[in-house]
Structure formats: structure tokens, C-alpha cells
Length: 434
Image 1: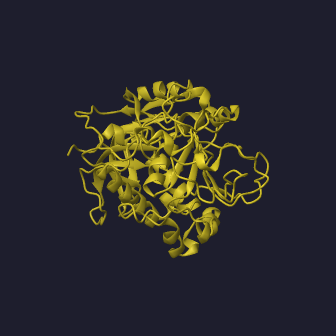
Image 2: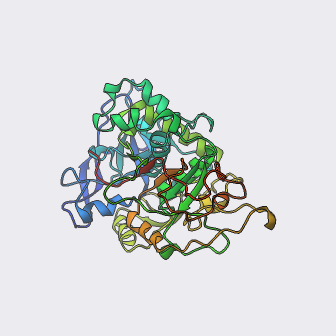
Image 3: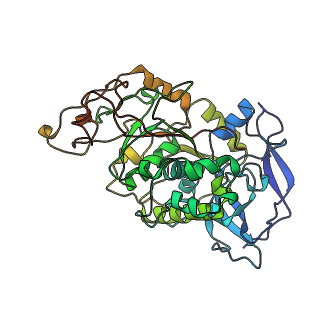
């Protein structure tokens, strides 16, 4: 393995509303404990917050600042006494949700990460494809697993996050997310196989992964996307009832949840549960990375890629910047039982109807509400709704019998004149983490 230099090249933000600048001679970050490793950066995934933060001057705790939330690289150093499951030479996906610790930022040649925030990339996933994952996966799992209470233990031994969090001493959880982690949803409200989940912002990377994970857990998924940007796929049927989110106050029987992103890096048991599960999901092909929509080269390519994102050219997938050439591109193994419309971006159609006879179900109405355009204003967010008890004040938009792919929705006969009522909503935001 090549010798590690004392200094490195980084990409620095000196002020808000300015481009990032390449800087030489920055100290290579040091590892501080037995769970930290040093990674040499190979491929950087560009995250929307990387351009939104400087443009709108948020989530920048200090200047000059190093940004970057996800990367793929090689482990090059551990402490001699390290008991980490990672070894020198492992190729890993580093997920940096701890944006206050600049040692962990992706826009540099060498990055420090905790082993519970790094997932090994299996041979069937190319390094560039791996770099499209990261914070979006964490947001999707926490949205479903914590805010909606989905138990993933039946999917390759995935985590039951609510159970895990409630076994951890409460004082070890950050105070600002403690209530969400411990009492955000009651046990009888937890989403279970067969429940309907509607995911807004369906073309976003977080939504792409949330759809895949929800389906693996047995949930019935409907996605809502921006009709004006992505159009309507004539081969798909849109089974969507859209009432919109309240601007001031949640309607009765609806609870809003803040996704506790920081639990990923502040609670090692949670971080390790997520990254080791991600390793198994990728190796088995049950989860596919988002579509790779473009590749730039070198640190100077980061600004070019972010400019493309600013202009709205990158939708329904991710851009990657490569610092080192990738010798081979290996195809990702996909689960053949998952329709491509649900795992390939852009997911303009949401749910793809399985093949069936014409007489098995009534035709579905085409969704034409202009409110769908509002999805674009919430880009980067995924709002998850479950079917719940009927509420008379909610207008009917779609017949219950047409909410599913050929099978009656639960309680259809009792709710002939009502729409699925959201009983819990989880919003993935891009606001600064405290």
C-alpha cells in the first residue's frame, strides 16, 4: 500500500455564495480512537446539500469549510490496537452525516470515518455506483424504521430500529432527537406488511431507496412525483390520492416526525446496524444503487457537477466525481422480482402494475391534479404516509378498490366515501442538523 503523505489536496469553501476552491498543503486528518479509520478517497458522490448549503448559507458551521457527504475509497490506516471489523485495503462507502467534523468531509484526498459509518462495497457493485448511495440510504432507513416503525429483521437480518433504540439508555441519545427515537410512534401504529405507504418526491434518491426498502418489508408503495418535470408514463397507472401537507398545522390524527439523522453517527449500535445491513443488501442484489447520471474527474469536476445540479440537469439519480480511474465497471445484480420502475430513476411512474387479465380490476384513473407540481418545491424530501382509519372530512379522490394492484384495499367496504387517511408522516429535510 502506498505511503500516506503528511499533506493533501482539499476543496475549500471560503464564503457563502462562492464556488469551492482547490487548496494544497492541508494536513491529512488524524484518527483519534480505535473505531476510526483513514480512507483514501477514490469516488465522491455529489449530494444536493453540497450546492444548497453555500447558495443559501446554511449547514456551514465554520469557514473555511470542507463539504461532501459520501464517498468510496480504500482503508489505508487503523490504530494498531484497533478491533475494527474493517481491514487495510477494504473498499468502503463512507457516509458522513457528522458535518461538523471536517475530518469526515468527502472533498479531500484522505478522510476519517468511524467503522460504524462505513459499509464495505461488494464485488457486484462498482465503486462509482456505490458512491451514489450514502446519506440517502440512512435517511430512508431511519424514516421507515424509526418514524414509521418498520421492522426490517425479516429482510436479511435487518434492524428493528425501534427495539434497538429502546434498549439503549435514554441518556445516551442526543436530547433533541430522544423523543422521536423513544416515543415518536406507538407500537400499535407501526407499519407492517400489507400497509400502504405513499412516498412523496418519488424521483429523489432518498425516495428511490425508501421504495426499495419498503417493498422488501412487505409494504404496498405508491410514489408521488413531479408531473411537470417527469411527465406521466403511459405504460404505468398512477394510483394516487393527493391532499397536500398543511402549511401551518397538522390535521387531526396526523403526526409529523423529524428524521433523527444524527443517531447514525452518534449511536454506534445504530450506525453499525445500518452499514452491515447495507453490505448484505448490496451483496444479495436486493437493493440497487440510484442511477449514475454523470461522472466528472478530479476536484475541479466537483464545481462543474454542482453547477449541473443547480441548473436542474440531474434528476432522479446522482453524479459522481472520480479522483482515481475506475478500471472495471461491474453490473449491479438486481432482484428480478422488483419492477425496474421502482429501482431505476427517474421513478416518474411510481408503482408499476403487474401483468394481469383485464377483467381482474377496474381501470385506474389518470392523475391530473396540478398540486403534483408542488412536489418540486419539496425536492430532497420523502414524506411517508400510511393507510389509517377513515376520516369523513377528507374528500374522496380515488376508489379504494383502485388503490392496489388488483386486490381490494383493507377496510374498503367500510370506507366507500373516504380516502386513505395518513396516520403518520415522516419528512426527510435538508435543514441543518443541530
